[in-house]
Length: 174
Image 1: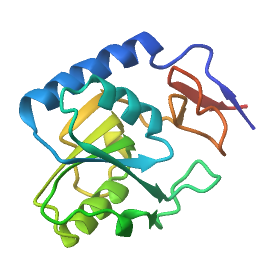
Image 2 (image 1 turned 45 degrees about the horizontal axis):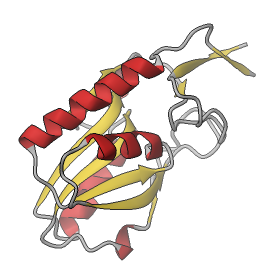
Image 3 (image 1 turned 60 degrees about the horizontal axis):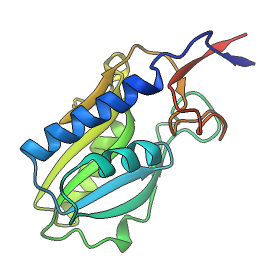
Image 4 (image 1 turned 30 degrees about the horizontal axis):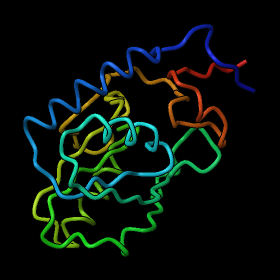
């Protein structure tokens, strides 16, 4: 059984301020055609990030990428759906995800987009959990560096709960 931490790991105001900073950094360094959001965890981050970016002509597309199921540990098996219906060939793509953990999901997604003919791919994650990295992969844009804790809120869930919290919280075992 799990309970939420006594206070948020990252308060909502800090998240929103950092989203604005990342958007400004992307605006100044990368011109892209498509924002590709990894559902479901990145939906809030993607929405806020896209609203803050100056590139109003980009397309937004969503894919479902999951390796967790209903547990707190990755299964190591990535399931991706929706990528086949997106025209990637000759496009510059910005992949947005909630968290870069082991690196396997992002590494696999980048490989799939290269295979589909993307001309350039950059990656943006809200949180980076370097301690869990199993694949040598690093995001181009990172919101927060975090320790190896299980986090929920701002789109991230535990068994489909906690997504709508405006802050990032940790779950603690009881």
